Amino acid sequence: MGDVWSVVTTRPNCEMMAVRGLLRQGIASYLPRFRHHTRPDKTVPLFPSYLFVDQFENWRAVLDIRGVGTVITDKLPEREIIRIREQEDETGCIKLPDPFAAGTPVHVTRSRFLGRKRLTSFVEPTMLSGITDGMSGKDRVFVLLRFLGRLVRVPVPKVDLVLGAR
Image (cartoon, rainbow, N blue to C red; front, side, top):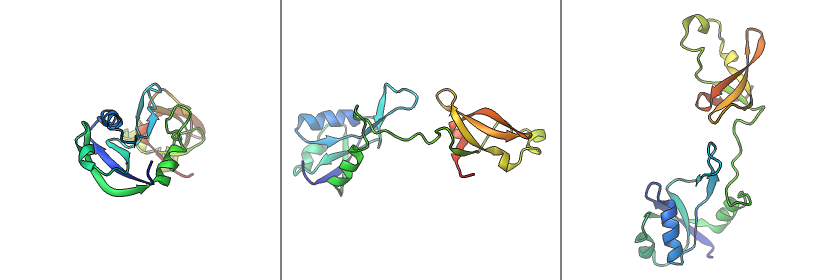
């Protein structure tokens, strides 16, 4: 492998097709992947529609491979590829940290309380800040919210949460 890599764009959802084509041509490539959070048996690209190609002289051959879009002319040092690969687990997937791990401070941006005129007068903005307390299904997180003087464990959709300091 060379000491410089380039970035190649792929057609949407054609990353694996491009990797297989590059492999058939004898061109080294790297497609960082991670495990899908709702389907652990499925892996998805860390950078959708992008992959890394070891420096190669004949770029026309790369562009002719099925699934490849364009070559980005910026060069990437091999140490950056190594840094990404160091984060892979034994299966070759990047291990991403869970942003909503138990004990993480969060703010609820939307909730079933907002939009109900009677309840919104009682709900202060600080009441919509809480701490995560585990997962509730595939796209929900249990959040401990202080409500009416006590902690209440409420399942909240991930899309309605933002990370925040208490």
